[in-house]
Image 1 (cartoon, rainbow, N blue to C red):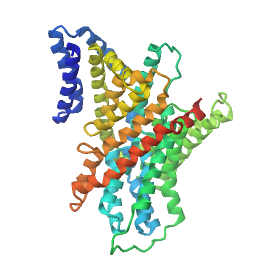
Image 2: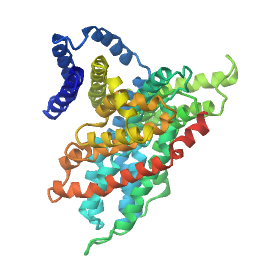
Image 3: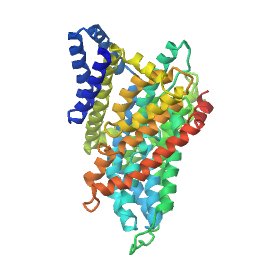
Image 4: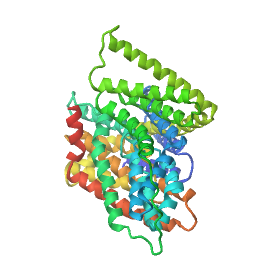
Length: 513
């Protein structure tokens, strides 16, 4: 073992020790490489001039327009969660099923898939499902372990079903690493990989995973003895329509504007944040006139998105279409301003903004820290060592992919998704992305694999959130045993995706190529 390899090994061990010690992950990810570099430099094993590139890397992160979508998507999810819109949707679903065990469990799953595309915030989704869905499922006779596993697994669907914050971060890393790796391989004009590609690529695998969950629940579920079915509570069609239509339209507008090429990911995230603010304000607005203004703003926003998707967005200045668009923009601005004032007066907007800043700060702190880790890793020649190691693996590129997938799965027991993305992709991705392997397929494989990190003990965040609000008769062991089948289903979905890459690549090529 050379000196550089020894320092790399020490840095890796120190990194895991730092993260497991309980100190903030950002400090461990940045501090351990820095200390390792300083010690190695004292022995003449590291050139400190590599660190001169770090300010430029930080500037690149903070000026990245794509990453601006992260706090906007977070704000969208927090506003929808705090406005209790999801709670009302689940309540309507519970009444529609009439309390049957299978119907109630499948309703929770269907609701989770829908809310995953709206919020994507695991903590809020899992806690809400525990408080609302768990009592209903247990009253309907669903076994406590199955209920616990279903809630934990369903609460993580927002990491795979677009629009997803994980896919935004993964798209940023895959896009950059793929471009650099292809240029090193001699391809100076590779097709760019966008977050829109990943959103389109994740749609079919995400829905496939939901279908796997639904099939397992339908086959596995047996009502407990003595369970009583609640009488069916008639739900007016208008209540169903006005409960589900607004969030569905919001999701369609955000995702559709990206896939149709009308808006960039950041612009669509801004649309989602404004739409979530309008929905939350409409629910909290006591005045009828204010509700009409907010509803009009939402309809005007949908109209503008529809015009853009229809290819009618290029209107000549002064034309009736341009004047209509200007009027719609004015209505949107007035409605958004009115809604923001109302939510601020109700104290909801302040809390949502504070939570958004907290989560965004955690994400960007890890991103900036991981840039230093990647820089020190390259300074030790780690990128060359990884390329040589993967080239020597049996199976060539597919052997290297298998190694990365196994490593990500194992890291999921200890690290969270954001940390894994910004450690694994820049360090281990270049040898794979420098080949003719589809970067979209590789990215979706990582996304499906990353979802298991939220369910695997001891640091699965979905398990933490579940245990924080679950009743005492559901033990930690019950929770762990409940999530095992869903982790296996995730791995089965990963296997299907490996066998049929077209599941991830067909839709992006149909839309963007």
